Length: 314
Length: 206
Image 1 (spheres, rainbow over the protein chains, first blue to last red):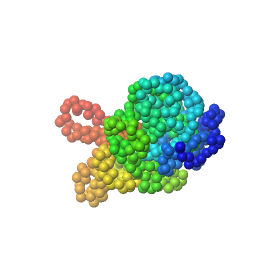
Image 2 (tube, helix red, strand yellow):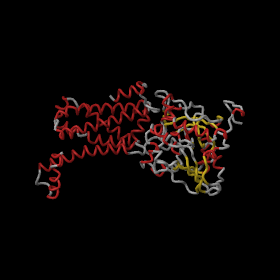
Image 3 (cartoon, chains in turn blue, brown):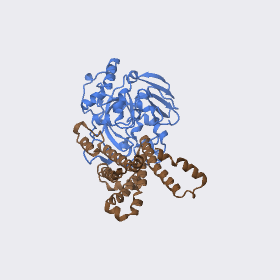
Image 4 (cartoon, rainbow over the protein chains, first blue to last red):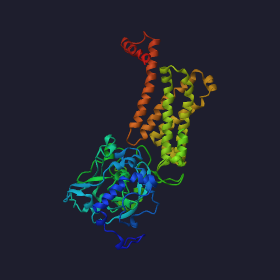
């Protein structure tokens, strides 16, 4: 039985079908398009409200960062390499209509409308730690559902050893893609057991509302025990593969960014230490804290890597 | 001026803000200002001779000292606000992180230049003063390298600085070669002589 800190009568919960009707989604798209203005007006969460329940079992007790911090300090190179650029330019991205192509080693393949993918998936809020490879961190209340539940619908075959995920490629909407800073489109991937792990989330919301574009609308991945770059944003393709996918940062600098990218204070980045991190939004001179193995999720995920040399598979 | 601007931003005055990570913002902005001032200091000599305004030389000491000031502020922010005075982390960073080793070296090398910037020291050191202050060339190169190495992926901006540095140092190299060719016209090989004399008129024309 999952503890519920904020009990909501089942009758009060709007059925997801109602929430994800086209009309609501259109409103959400308009709201997220206007998110820049809303943020400037006072940092209140933008986007359409979502129906969800908090999953306390998978939430941390640390204080979440503010909506403003989470939405104005982003690494989303498709909109520029400055932290502020995504919040300035991400409104150029059209997130409706949105479809996701499913390909590779699965029985169910094809192109699916976002509405179809989300239909019948109860949403939950989880408060996760988020640790960037650049040694800063956040605490974020995401709204989503386990990736495993989505993947199961496509009936991956026994040859599906990995899952490869791809971000939208649209240089007209994503000005950062006009420069070859990374090989576009952005690709990330997980081993199938990592992808099916209950901690791995498909995220559609933040602070109870639909995701703002700069945080990866309309749907993104969150893998809380890995460095942030694994948690790919604005996903348009899911491909099941037998071989390890070529992921964007690993291709860009293989000696600096491994395929696994598990948060590990004992394995430094070649150019900087990973032993500590700075929690954004902390009081003056109290931001730096030790980094935890697997970002504090070792009890849940360390067994996935039993017998592996984590220095080699960094 | 930049420092005043950031102080306002740090306290949220006049609608200015340092964003979600004010420490990194301040650290990077101070570092970049120090680098900008280093580049401006290095451009005094070329600009002076190209424009024929010898009085520009008087600005050079002030610019150099400002560069040193911002480099010190940059380091102080890193030590106090970023590392939160964790000296063990500082030691590990300087010993193990090449980009920090390089940046720290540049800062340490700036100290003797700042200390010998007074008129009295210039007089006392005489010809040795010029030799000592040529340290500014390796310092500028280290500073650009420090910037280049700490960037995660997008190296366009550090490469721009590298280009500017190459121009500023290339100008000096060219002048030095021309002066040497003028001093020993017969010592140079015939091939080299024609090539340098071909470009010898270039600075005059600009």
